[in-house]
Length: 448
Image (cartoon, helix red, strand yellow):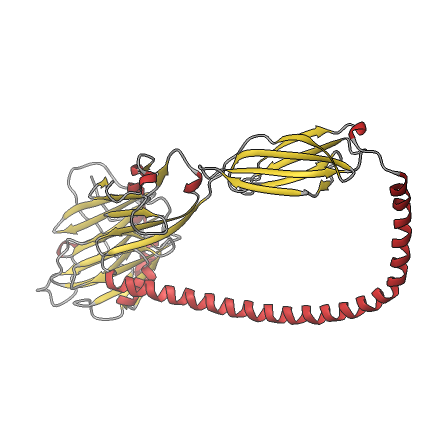
């Protein structure tokens, strides 16, 4: 297994793990002694990289390349480094342009922070100048200035915010009114005249603006309608493309599954494509006999140490195969067991030297999955010997079970169709006779 974490270039790498240990020969100098692979996550299917003593230069994309034998995959991770710097320092620089110039500075932030001035009422103020510089560690130093001309503001606040985390630090300064320069008489007259001139110009241009605005609305309306049509067409194309991509990905997965379907204990729906459906029907006569016979309601008894199969009505198989038998090929059939608390399901084998289907249970070899209450067991029965293959732990009761029979590979597999999961497989069996499906609404009669 080969694991490689790297940045933009494949080599040198951030970390290389091969032959059960980390390889320091290909590691970048800036990551030596700061990285390690979280080995506890490997057994869970994860290859997590731990970076200690984080630096601003660690910010950015990381590629994870995994290779095991002929299988390999790659993924990209975006690492965001957040640095909260110092509290902003705010102080007055002196009079300027009829007001007071105020400077706000802070350092140690990453990435480049946002600076915002505001007054006591929370109204945002526009910075006059703003500069950002980086030190040797890549951290930002920021300075922003503001000229306050309104002496009634009292306090102004400078806040510095990290754009990734939204965290901010705030400082305020009080500006006394006597510190503001006094306005000259001609400036006061100008302040009174300018609003009147502005009002006159506004009235003159109002009529022309109304006409222009009407034309502008019509142009915007047509443009919006055109954009909406283009957007609908683009969304339709994207939806069709996404559908095609999903279909292509599904076909690729199914093609890969076809290559290894015998080993993959997944996707029973896809597994059906490798098998032929077997046509079976329920034997109604035996079904009613099973439900009416009082002896069918007996529970397991613990009286003797002899394992035997007891049934007065023959094998009481509820399934009739609509063909002679199974002697070759791959076949499957489904059984609905959602309303049954107890059942026995699987196949039995008729001896090779028997020309007719034997009615004697002693001459049949059973390989079945059995349910009694909340217990599930895989059993084999032959010549009055019952062998327990495995006690199965099934959390959710199956509603429908599909049985896959591969005669040439001597394989019988049971799948839960509702959950799409594998239940059990008889893989050590060796078929030599004719095979028949078996289903009973009661477990096999055993005395322990």
